[in-house]
Image: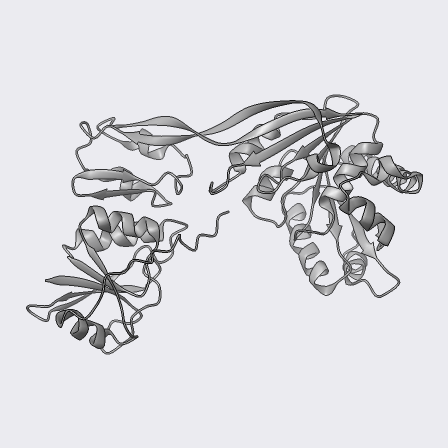
Length: 285
Length: 120
């Protein structure tokens, strides 16, 4: 089963939930899709780490064959090509690797070369296989890394927790593509409820079964909870705004592995999530 | 000499546009004949690489100098290869900048910015 954890903004607790839910599962894979700033590995401190590079294809022009017809320049939706002074200039950072210019070139002057944009690290932390995507600084898009990350999906009797990037852009859509269930994490503020609405609209658009974890809850009024009630969204659980929790977490420790109280909270939360996810997938099929 | 300026409206009495790549129009001005041509910037709504496309248009129009308040690094690279000199504007007024250019009072723009890209 693949469970994606997402939120409309950073800092709501996606990593907190994915790391701790994975820790209390029997067997789990934790997949960090927040490739611009992956941080789950800081908690898991995985051992036996293996690393593989991720490459994309970038056009390469043979200037002897190019006759300056500019078909590629006109075609490129992202303007990654310019033709200046009898020479084609390629902007690698702008290129989205669609390969259109290669297909289109009547002179067959354009071929492709591999360009490294980041890497994937796989390691083990107790019951959890930890898979981390890392995008090199300055690269335009982490989507190719996420595509490769998600090939490592859960085996039978395993749960994969997909820790998504914040927001609701392409990179998040890619991350939830193969998810069987989505957990939306929300903060108890007006801003938090607005961000919840963004990801709620996204999971509805993708027709994904979903539920909400309300994080940082206090006694005070919770606009995100009100949003859930109003839209009849299933509330999977509430995590209190708690000094001890914050302290353990900020020291890079896994709550569920450090403290029995939190182990119980996340075990019961996981049970609830699995029940919901199973219900939803049965109804679906 | 033909020069280019990113402009907000199709009038020489108007303002220089604050952006190069996303300017709605380019004024192509001939300093010899005083001829004005306004080009629509087809890059204005591009998903990306607006500066590259805008620079391509400017270069294709036989321009020798660009007058702009700022320029991104990709556009600058295209213009450098096209041997178009980039000058920094001194005020909002299109006219003031053309006059200053003719009197050789404009200086070359050196502070190229890395772009305002919003990657998705």
